[in-house]
Length: 489
Image 1 (spheres, rainbow, N blue to C red):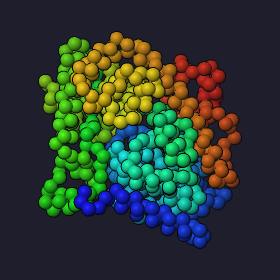
Image 2 (cartoon, helix red, strand yellow):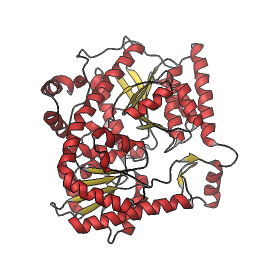
Image 3 (cartoon, helix red, strand yellow):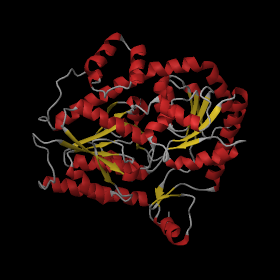
Image 4 (cartoon, helix red, strand yellow):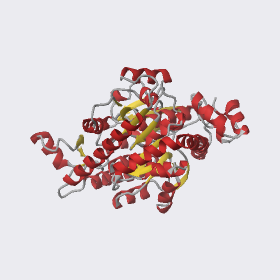
């Protein structure tokens, strides 16, 4: 990256702007303050506009939940998007603003126009994918906190961070409240002395397109309507993190170099001969296991790209199969259709966290092939760690085939484990709603509140029939009655 570290420069720029806003606030030069009778303006900071299905589903359900747990017309929501054309038709009732790839000045201008910031991305505090993404979300939270406004991370996960990023997060999120979707993340934040509470992902309450839509799309792709479906969600696990690199950006723009690793703007994927060799080994292992399992079971194989970036992984994997199989990529199919397709799977093999999460309300038995702690935390929490593999483990092909055979044998038990797990996530999601309302009331005590019992059942959005059926089957009678009575209306 040359003689400078652009990630550190971004952090330094955000640090300067946050401290500048703090000084401005101390002088009473605030752009926007909430007053009784006004709607509370919340800025949602996340990774949408890249056709990442998981990120989009999370935000869709956050907005539905926020609308449910606050009085009508109490909120005015604004969603940051990287590309409004790719989020068109999503996030109904929320204004969308375009965030540039070089974001510090944008955040400095936009955050003070609101009464609070809610950070939305699941991979909120980690360097695995892009330190700049965490800098953006932590920076937005820091700007809100600098003015004494609402500053909340919602359904977050925290992991390993580079030292400078960890220091940035510790400094500027000290006054934020972070609601974490697993205990491992809470341990990370505990060490940073950041306030945190238990939480969950918000994708559990998502309602995709009707099953008939997914079935029609699969039949158009060649499915006979009865054949078992094996769905795979591959990625390139070895080209992360993405980093800003001005030198590479100039070489890309003017010399046509670094095309393979270019992500967008001045951002580039990790690229080396070693990482490329690992990627090829991962794909070869998937292809070998799939081919053998297909011969054994006669399954209909489908590849799903949960983010538009996954198109390359799907195409590269397809090229290794004896014959090409249908692909469904998120830039061709909206999140409603794509999840409807996923839920028709008989078996799922995924390196994408939200492919597993959004398939679970249909109790799809799944195997995770993980590159970081997200799938690991999920599989441990739901009680099926034996179905978790690593992207770079020795013998991946053989181990995946063995796991698929075991999944066939134990699919009823896995489906039951999934069914029992989801009500616990609904409780945590409802509790997140309670904690958000409490935090908002602490900062804005005069904001109107709904007059309902402070119990998780009353702090969920409306539940889709499939999710409500799981709650009926696996939850206690009192909880079921409360949800139907008022918690999800």
